[in-house]
Length: 214
Image (cartoon, rainbow, N blue to C red; front, top):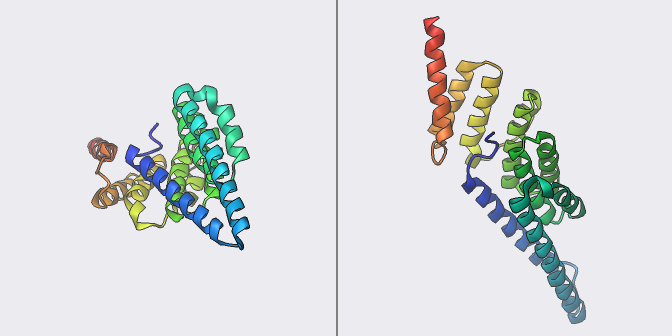
């Protein structure tokens, strides 16, 4: 099941997370610090904490990539222990992606909800909402899927939002509305690196022709 559209989308998500993390470290290092000793102590502590967190996250991400489902328990524990520090949210995204691969949609949904609750980044939030909408659609929960999709507001996600909207319409057998949504996705540049959208348009055209013949 294609929950995540492109590898490029996942890469951009990772980049945004690292950018956000770096900014948060700079902000934390400036606010509330007075005196040279306090600054040096805080700086040393932050470096050690970041290094430990980065190493632990690297281990979890490698385990997920190489061991797959066998690493789910360790990854879940890491997410629980690191909620709100960016590494936890990023691990939740990776775990959700692996869960989708083995059709564990309940776990994918849980991890995506944790990631959404833990981030304040608007672009990342919209990415997660799109993924949640797809997972919920696969779980045959179109109403909840629509509620997440309605909250995706960034123009940059217009094509993806329209495509997922089309999927929701198709699941409810609203083919005319689905066609309009898919065409809106196409017109917004949705065919770039996404041949699946053209396939949906082609299949919809064929099914419409067959329906007309009947």
